[in-house]
Length: 243
Image (cartoon, rainbow, N blue to C red; front, side, top):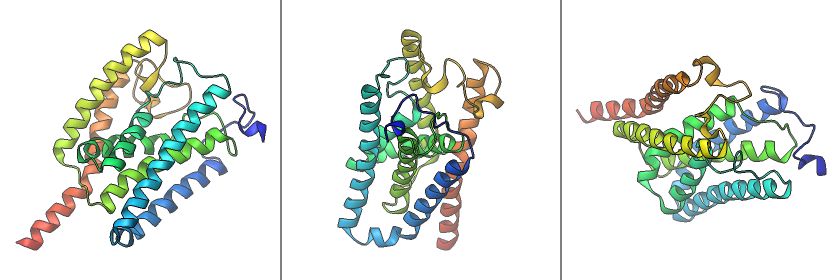
């Protein structure tokens, strides 16, 4: 069992291996289950509260256990382990959103949470394979982020607006500036604004540093517009029914 926790474990992750595909299958199954049960959950205030609480607890446990693992394995380092990656920031925002049912945070985390978590799940920057703790925590946290956001859409009826995209892009640019300063101080590469990751990722297709950051801005806007598209169709259908 010790090998499953060892920071220097031989369980090396390979993208789209059997374990990776299984994790993606679990993600799909959980998303479909949430969608199928959305009306059942919404019929009871108790179910609303329990579902929100369960998602918040999973997210909190993932983050707390990760930091505990960093400390116990002796690898906690301000260069690598501060909670400054986009998905980690989205995780914290999701917890606040779930607890206080914040519409303001939802408007941002709908895009950063789904967009960031989906990219992370499809092209993980991960070095440990199943059954290592880090593999389980990584996929549990990112899947829970997506579930938290889509819970607010499917059960609570929250909706992003076109203005949300502009707000999210503004938030990301301010955040990237702050993180870049922290990277300069610590020597880290949080949010990959200082250099590309060492493992294959979407950034490999977007040019060298720093130009891939500008390319990534365009990709982000396109992705956010695609994420917003289902709501434009629903609004259009609703107007046609009212006409």
